[in-house]
Image (cartoon, rainbow, N blue to C red; front, side, top):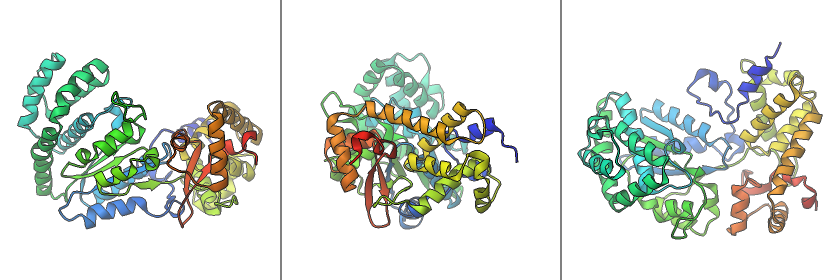
Length: 434
């Protein structure tokens, strides 16, 4: 079988989220739930579809950036749609400036995406509160468009697009909207969500679910009053984000789990965040994790041979790599970070330019990546990394939060409880040789 190198390169694209409802994309999907602590997405689906009755469910979902959360959330979307729900999924960083986010920004983004999705489904809303609001905002921002004459979603999009690009406009809008946040929540509920659910049920739907992805990417920068942005949004203002009267799933930064404010987050949202850990490549004692390694190898081989049965793919390893051991080395070096694994593969294909891919080039890529990581690590951080390597755990210390955000440390699940390991590429640095 001749392998098209360009097609293989495209199949390894690291930032492309797999939409599992798409038949072709589904061929690439590997279910890692057996090594990640169970059917996390199925638990959320069951809670919404079966256990919620008439009570809106608000769930939090987290994990390292690039570990596969978006793919799992799209699977949740497809599963809930099969269960009869109208699901609105969107990537919040398309609407928000992630270095400067406030609750009113998130609420407007949700209102926009819900209304646009409803309009596509033939449900048009004319919220009186927002028509009045648009008129006042137009004067504040000096927007030339006559917002009262456009669809509700278009009106919000006009405002949010203008403010995302301009900090000055964003401050103007926020100064006007923030004192009105509770009124905006009430208006979204009464003039958007409640009528939408009523009309959706008339069409045979069970209800409305909103999935807000990529909020875990909000920058951990301090607000002018000193609070870090994640703590401000999800601890201080969490009750308002939970105030929508439909089912909502938010992604949140993984570092919040190690913050002193984590208890406040769970209290405000009245739920414990669901965590998607890395795919384990090693056990806590340092030995290989056979099932995790096997699934990662299948993920790589599925990109090259999507129409071949899993067991048969194993016989084709040497069509891509110079030896099975080279593929194992790739999976181990990735630490089970799905996006990094695919990124290594793309860089490898680009550098080598032919098949099979050689171990020597992979080692060169690993050394370069280690060098880039080492440059950013301080002496105190090396001390913390040594502690992680020894004890397999982290604490709420600010230094550990930085290690998590920087992906110097990965979280795993071994069937009993979470444990933490140093990024395998860093673990080979001379500074960590114990």
